Image 1 (tube, one colour):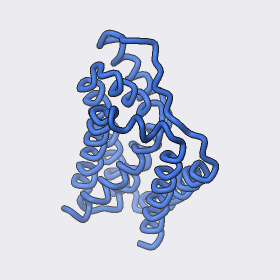
Image 2: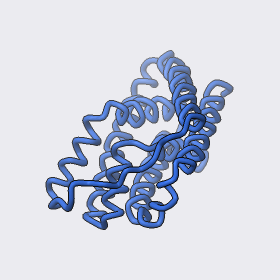
Image 3: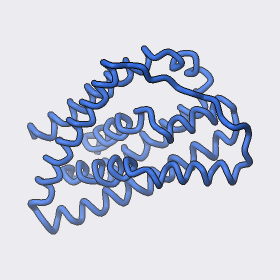
Image 4: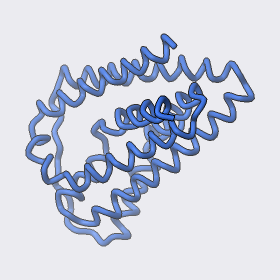
Length: 199
């Protein structure tokens, strides 16, 4: 179980930790201390739904089409190499910072609608959760543990991000922090890609 759970956890964490619209939204809400629990829960449940769909769908497909798992393994490795390169380039160039300004306090329902739009209208969320996590899970015999690890990483990350935002704000106001983070993400992606290619 642990052999599949840990890779799922680390892969999901590596994908989700990169700066993006969803993470910036959670950070802003955390900094303003508005609807933090519901925002984090919504993000976690959304990812859990997408990850479960990816793991279940790709696993069933891989059993019916043996060549599909191989194609997805090399495709996933290629995506990870590209994703790592993109983060490495961001680390080299720098210039990212977190803008926490927002338009003021919204009620809960409009806040969650905005968050759902940011989540489900972003094509990268499908690449990361359904396609990438789903395809990599197909190489594990215990796909359920892999998916559980991925879901736990997502839920944990969002709650830590939302409630820890006030502590992180001074750190990530500096572009150097984003460069270090992007470099770590790039190395993690390349290590996972190497594992896929060498397995």
